Image 1 (cartoon, rainbow, N blue to C red):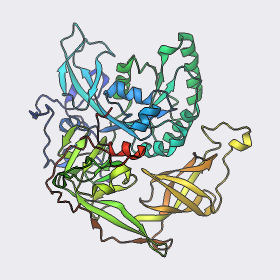
Image 2 (image 1 turned 90 degrees about the vertical axis):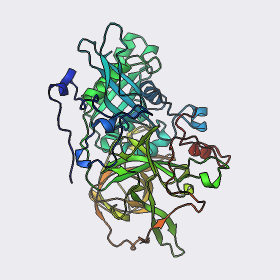
Image 3 (image 1 turned 180 degrees about the vertical axis):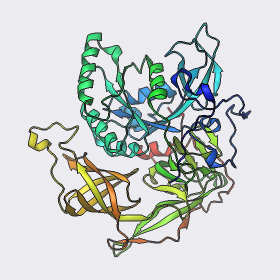
Image 4 (image 1 turned 60 degrees about the vertical axis):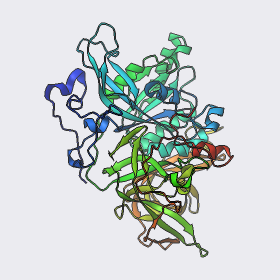
Length: 538
């Protein structure tokens, strides 16, 4: 597989203050409407890398997850850094917890004045902010310049939303582990989330000891020792622990500095055929919209490889899934065309692997509303992996349940997999049931309740139902996929379905995927989902 790693091109400036910098912004062509660098849709993907100025001016190139127990301040930290409130939906605001995956982009800047003190020389702004502006610290005449553009995946911390968290982990390059300073460590989902990111092979974690404004210094120091003991022997063993107050924005500049210095630039593949993993989807049309103004569905997610461009012909797999009378499952890939690309409010001519983006299509919006495309894969027509329902996996089980208080050691111990047992399987952003049809040593064969677009080598998480909640019990990787796709009732109709509303949607329709959307019924959940395209909704 071809990959693009970042190659230094600006000499001694690359290690300015110990930071790998993008090429200079001063020579870039600025768009007069949004004051961001213009993109050339005809650019050769081989010339792109995660720090190309015309890329990071508009799109985030690093995905950072916020993980940890419920109410430990994950959404507050994201808001302190990006200025974006990720709790947007009515049912989330009523309960003041994250239920859907939240998302927000932020630009991180470094002052180019050598005398500007750290960590004050670091600051952050929203995704649409200009790339260069004067230093705000009194007595210094330098200029802040964009060094990183990151996308935050804000995961829910409630135990019943573990599947949602695992879906978000599929696109993370690094994570911020939030631990509240006014509670004992670890709390149940603190340990469960840390285990989950270990399963996803996440190596770069920054620990944030939040709410230190609520505790005495001695208590904060004692908890610091608790945290060190908790992470010992885990992937977060050597991770920095930063005391912060997200509510008061105390030490947020230190967090920005560590994001820049501790999280390396990911190696990205810009030259393979594009593939995007869908973690959100929505209908951005308002109720009662005139037929001629209807807009196609929007898929939100992260590109795993390749470059998507406006005008590209794409397909979504598995697509439309139907069940025949004889029990056979049929999948019809959805074929469409990209009519717009957005990263929050920033319009894109092309999108690269990395941060979360919105892909505007001509797909019937009824197929995308209320996250109906979550778990699907979007990419170039004919270039996506095949769709399967039978997997053979190599797996590993945890020794005991995480995030669950049990009366005895025996109850907390994870039992071996049993034939005919039903588990929850997380593959990429797909959550589906899976029945074990054979188990042998560290290999098992699973028949899924829903078809998935996947390939050999892909990682997955295994969860078992315990006390009416799905609990993480282990992980695995796919070693073989059934080539007889009809053996367990999967029939593939690969002719595809070009799904375009019969409402007269114009092919050249361009739109902002963050436009305010209305609701189409009175249910609370759908009310939130239909508003998913509204970045500014309060």
